[in-house]
Amino acid sequence: MKQAIFIFSLLLGMTGSLFAQKPTDNFAGTYKTDDEGVLIIVSKISNGFVGIDPAKRIVLKDVKFVDGLWKGTVYNPKKDITADCELYLVGNKLKIVAHKGFLSKTIYWEKQ
Image (cartoon, rainbow, N blue to C red; front, side, top):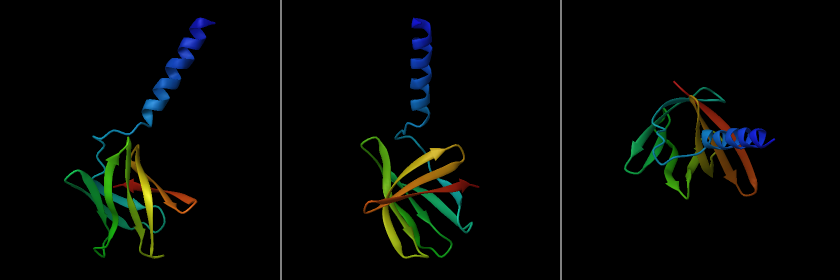
């Protein structure tokens, strides 16, 4: 019984570390959005990141590592909506959880 509890605890701890964010995470690269396949170029700037679309609009800004999370602002030019967000690296995708008021939406951009 003790061995089963140990193995379960070990697996649970390993699973949590898979999704942990680190200040060394690197979001830089070219990503294709999940809705219309627009290419976004995410670049490293000083201590954070910024994302620019083909029309040279900033669609991801002020991305910084704060309180153990990558936080910033995401902009949807099609709907003219700006929202606070958290960013996560999930394999070759950038997971963006946007928050506007009490609503939230998760979008994925695939690295090219």
